[in-house]
Length: 113
Image (cartoon, rainbow, N blue to C red; front, side, top):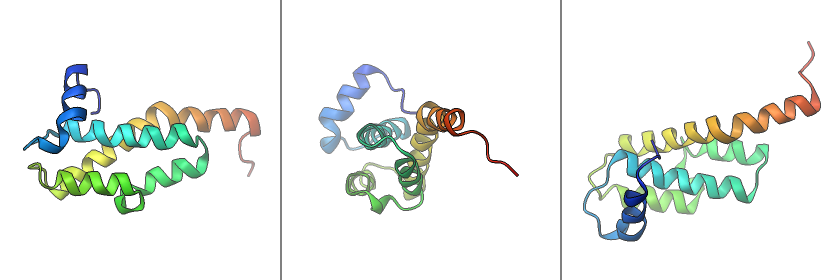
């Protein structure tokens, strides 16, 4: 989960490159922060889709890919890193994407069958 303490946020942001180990929560925080930036820059459905694709193909975003590569040297496995990306995506969905979809449903109406 990306909700690490404010002290840990500062620690991770300022010392990430020199840290020997990092927790799954700290990794999720870093991925969430990047996803939030992508969303805030372009809040539309195409962005939701793109961020979702990062859970399977982190190489699609240069910063996510570089972060993933750096985390491999911080005592996290590839599986842990992918799960951190998925956990960050889950939080984005819960806090931002669902609200966006609800707004579009209200504006445009339900799909008719």
